[in-house]
Image (cartoon, rainbow, N blue to C red; front, side):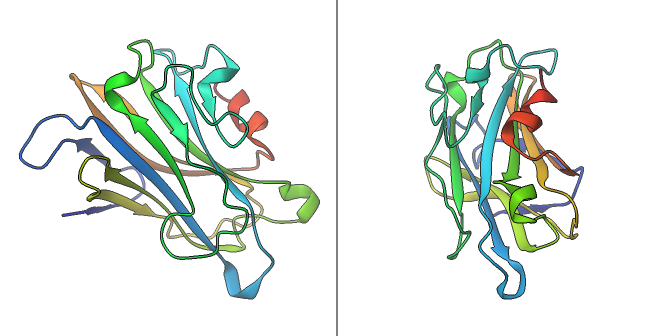
Length: 189
């Protein structure tokens, strides 16, 4: 049974009946508001150490760096429009392979060329992040943005983090004015 989270809520990632999940699919989706132009949102994962910072640019998994060197996180590709049902972009996380030096994985979305195209999250509907058990394809949780964010061009959706030998997820929903993944990533350097 999937749980719908609200901003700030946390959930422990365990299998039905207990146990630690090995692999999760982090799906992100969005729709363009009211017949507007296509919006190219880009989902990224930022792997951070215990200090909340990245140690290398390779710790950012996105459309130009689809695979983390550890093999623990990879992107399935780049959806340029947000059209269609379900997930528009997915990041796969093999929790068992995430090196111990990484304490959290932050999931962010930036709008490609937002300033040039004059686009922002105020033009997006139905934005969400969800986590699916990679073994059973069963949705564990979903967090849908309930607000519009005009003028904001990026979003910190949520994060997976280690706690007591397992993994937890926090729904963050923090909109920013970062114009590109490089700007967003600088927050974690």
